[in-house]
Amino acid sequence: MSRSAWLAAISGSVLVCNIHYSWSVRLQKVWKKHRAKVVAVGILLAVLLIVGSFGIYRLKADSAKGRLFMWKISCLAVMEKPLCGHGVGSFVDVYGQSQEAYFAKGDYSKDEEHVAGSPEYAFNEYLRVAVECGIPVLLLVLGIVGVCLHQGIRRRRIGICGGLLSLLVFSFSSYPTAYPCFLVAFLCLLVACFLGTSSRWMLVIAFVTSVSGGWLIHSNTYETCRKWSQCRMLYGMKAYGPAKDGYEELYPFLKHRPRFLFEYGHCLHKLKEYNHSTRILEKAMMHSCDPMILNIIGKNYQAEEEYEKAEEYLIRSTHRLPGRIYPYYLLVKLYAEPEYRQPDKLKRVAEIVLIKEPKVQSTASKR
Image (cartoon, rainbow, N blue to C red; front, side, top):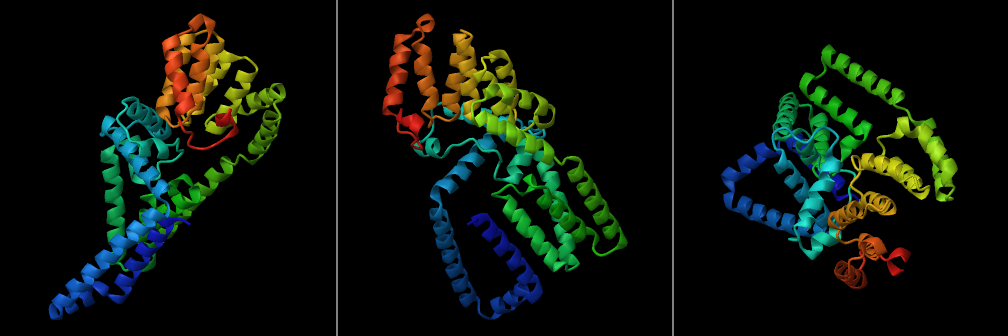
C-alpha cells in the first residue's frame, strides 16, 4: 500500500472538487455568517489531520524514518554545492559519499543506523533536482510548474490540474520521473495546462509523444537484457569463465547499470583478475551506493597485498552502512594477515563482530 499514492490522489481530488463546487466561495459566505462554527470545524479537521498523519506514520514507521533520514542526507549533499549542484545523474554517487561522511563523524542515533540503506532513488524529486542541478534550477522548475498550474486553473482545466497536482504531491515522497511514462505524462499535463486546446497544444503533444516514442524504440534493450539473463544464470552457477565472456560482450550496452557492473566486477574478482575487477567496480560506484562494492574492492586490494588500500575501502564500507557486520568481518581477516597483523585493531573489530546485532538475520551473519 503506497501512502504517497493515497495522499496524491486525495490532493488532486480536493483541488478538483474545490474548483468544481466552488468550496472556497461557499466557505467565505459561511465564514461571514458563522465564524465560531467555522473555527470549531477547522480545529476538528486539524486534529483529525494530525491524528491521521500520526496513524499513517505508525503504519510503516521504519519506512517513514528511512525516508526522513534519506532527505536529511540529501539536504547535506545540497549544502555542499547549493548553486550549481553535483551534476545530472550523480545523485546515487553523491548520496553514498554524503552518508559515508555523516556516519564517519560518529554523531548519529541507533535509529539512523537501523533505517539507513543504499537507495537507488531519492524518494523526493525536488531534492534530487537540488542535489544534481542546484537550488536555482529547482526554483526555476517550480516557477514553470507554478505558472502552468495557475494558467490551468484560470482556464478551468480542472481534471488536468488535478492530475498535475497529484503528480507533484507524489513526487514529494517517491520517484515518478524514473519511469518514462510518468515523465511523458508530466510534460503533457504541463503543456495542456499552459496551452489549452489550441492547435499549438496538439502539435506540441504530438511532438513530445513522437520524440518519447522514438527514444523508447532507440533505447530498447530487450535483446541485450535477454543475453544478460543468460550471463546471470552462469554467474549464479559459479561458471565465472563463460559468464565473463558474456559480460565483456554486453559491457558497451549496459555499462551504466549498477547491477550489471557489480556482477561483472565480482565475476572478475572470482577469476582473480583483481585490477580489472577494481576498475569495473569503481565505475559501479558512480551508479550505486551499495557498500558491497567497497567490500569487493577491499578484497581485491587485500589479494594484491595492498593492505592499506584494502583497509581504507573496508573502513569506508563500515561508515557507509554501519549496521552491516560483513565489512567488520573482512577487517578481522585483514588484520589477521601475517604481513599486516595489527593485534589492537584486530581485537577491537573482533569485539564489534561478536557483539553487534545484525539488522537482518542471514546465514552469513550467523557464521
